[in-house]
Amino acid sequence: PPQAAACDLPALLKRAAALERRLEVDVEPGPPVELMADEAQLEQAIINLVKNAVEASLEQRAPEVRVSWRLAGENAEIRVEDNGTGIEDTANLFVPFFTTKPAGSGIGLVLCQQIAENHGGSLGLYNRDDRSGCAAILRLPVPRKLM
Image 1 (cartoon, rainbow, N blue to C red):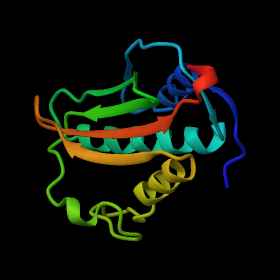
Image 2 (image 1 turned 180 degrees about the vertical axis):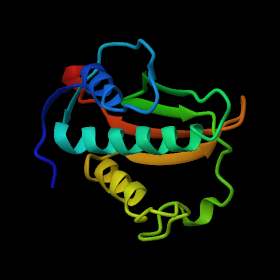
Image 3 (image 1 turned 120 degrees about the vertical axis):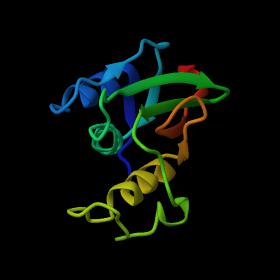
């Protein structure tokens, strides 16, 4: 279970994105947001979502990955977007041990989903409407006193 403590979301996102070495990840500015969350677990989820986005984008001529966040009602909405080919089959996204990657384990997205749900949030992956690629959207509750 998460060991919740005050967590500076923008700082966490910038730190997680900076760990990616294969591609510079664009972290867009957003509002100050403080969550009550297990920072280590949340960081692991973001690292995995960024890693997946980079792997999808590296196949493109001009790879791009963007991380952004906003407040949406009582939630923080974190978006990790890539310009890869998108998702062919969404049916197996969160099936444990199912993978389309030659060296994949099939536990990354399942772990991210479990971390989101254990924090009272959700994770969804969608094909982008504005261009090719995928958007991972992680929604986490923002405590009222911290909004």
